[in-house]
Image (cartoon, rainbow, N blue to C red; front, side, top):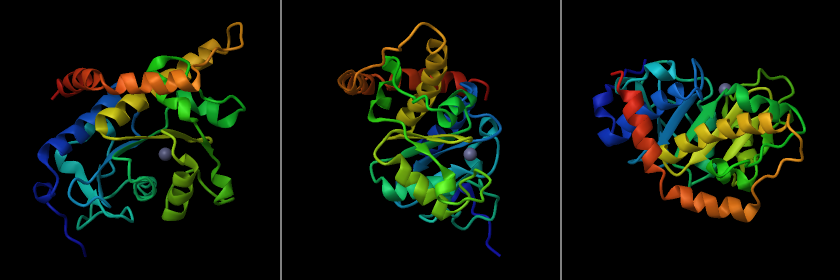
Length: 244
Ligand SMILES: [Zn+2]
């Protein structure tokens, strides 16, 4: 019987865990996460491992809820209940050494783009990072009999392969998974992917065709936004943590 590991003994820097709590609350505040979905960050001590909350609604996550997960997405020395879909995190960290943080969301705004021929593309500069393309993961290709959830390493591996080198992968009839080089960037990308989906759905009802950002515009705007990402992060963190 594994014993619960007191959070105080987690090897992570305290600031990293506090930022992970903040990321949970920001994403709940912005409506990217509700009772479901999760955010993780790669371990600063053991790069194959990552930190993520036990199975609890993101708005309620506290530092004491955070567990270390190993490279196979299992909690390390902690018998509390983990998220069912933890495997998507471990497999993306395994396949993408550049990824330092991951958000998985059931955002209703992105669902239409995973079930139709409409492709999610950058409609404005805040979501310019989508220029690299937004693949759609079809879970039936991995497993015909499924419940849509990424509930083991095989499904996580194929989702990670579908993501490829992109920033975001949609999951048919399920949601999206977004990656970044840290918590500020992944939160920024999750918020603005959702906003882009919302705006693209609106624009699609107006006289078309829609003028999307070109690949070059996407590349340039992404570089510009990277330089200012701390500004919304500090604002969101202050608002999200003000409630205690
Ligand atoms: Zn899910």
